[in-house]
Image (cartoon, rainbow, N blue to C red; front, side, top):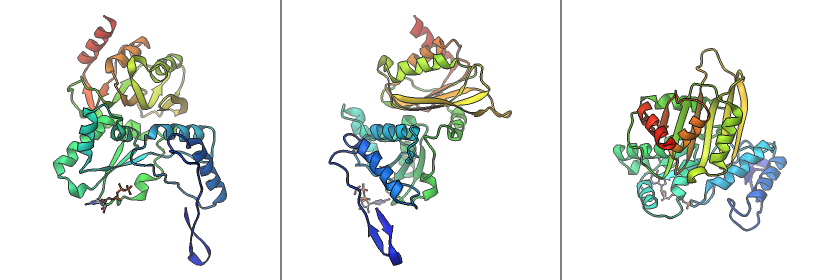
Length: 314
Ligand SMILES: Nc1nc2c(ncn2[C@@H]2O[C@H](COP(=O)(O)OP(=O)(O)OP(=O)(O)O)[C@@H](O)[C@H]2O)c(=O)[nH]1
C-alpha cells in the first residue's frame, strides 16, 4: 500500500500473507489482513484487489460476501473483469472447444463490470459481436469500452452489486431485454437466464426450489450467481434475492411503490442452465407461467415454454 507520509513523501507499506493462492489457500487470512488494514488507516475509501489472470473469482466472491453478512468492516462492492478485445474471441473459442477450466467464462460470468480494453485493436463489428457474446454469458454485467483501461472511477467504484437493497440495475435490465426475439435454445456453456412471474410466490417454496438448484445441483446445473426481486405472498414488501454459488439471501427490502408492477424477476448465471428444468421447478411452485423467460439474452415465447413444461412432465 502506498500512502502519503510527512511533507507529502510517499510511504510504502506491506501486509504479508502466508504463501498460497488468494482464491484458495489464504482466502480467510486475506479477509483478516483487509480488516487489519481498515483498522489501521483512517482514510481508506476503497480497496482494489487484483488477482492473477487465471483466478477463479468464485471462492473470493463467496468469502468476501459472507464476511459482509457477518458485519465485517470490509464489504464486497463489485467484481471487475478486464478483457482484451483483440484476444478474447480466441480465448472464448479455445475454451468452448476444450474441456479445460473455463477461466475466461468464469471471469465474465462473475463480473459486475467488464472493462472491454484495447478497443483500438478491434473493428466496430468485432466489438459488437464480443459484447453480444458477453451479454449472453452474463446479462447483468455493465460493459465499459476503453483503451489503456482509462475509465471514470465513478463507473467502477461504489457499484453496490452485492447490496441486498440495491436492485435498480436488475429492474432496468429486465425492462431492457423486452425487445429481444426468440432464437435457438439448445446451447451449452455459461449462460444467463432471466425469469419473470406476475403471481405472488410462497417464500418457503421458493427457498426449497433454490436450495435444490444451488445446493443439490439439480440436473447438473452449476449456478454461479443469482439475483432477483421477489413478489411474496402475504407481504407488502419487495424482497430481494442475492446469491453467490451455494450462499444465497432473501430479504424484505422495501414496500412496493404505487407506480411499479408487483412481480418477481430472477436472474441465474451459470453453467449447463436448463430452461426446462428451471421451469419445471417453477411449475411446481404452483403457478402457471404468466411472465417472460429470457435465455442467453433471447426471449422464449409462451409456446416454447409450454412445450418445455410438457417435455418435463411427460
Ligand atoms: N493498443 C493498445 N495496447 C494496450 C492497451 N492497453 C494496454 N496495452 C498494451 O498491452 C501490453 C500489456 O499491458 P499490461 O497492462 O501490462 O497487461 P496486463 O495484462 O495487465 O499484464 P500483467 O502485468 O501480466 O497483469 C502493454 O504493452 C500495453 O502497453 C490498449 O488499450 N491498446
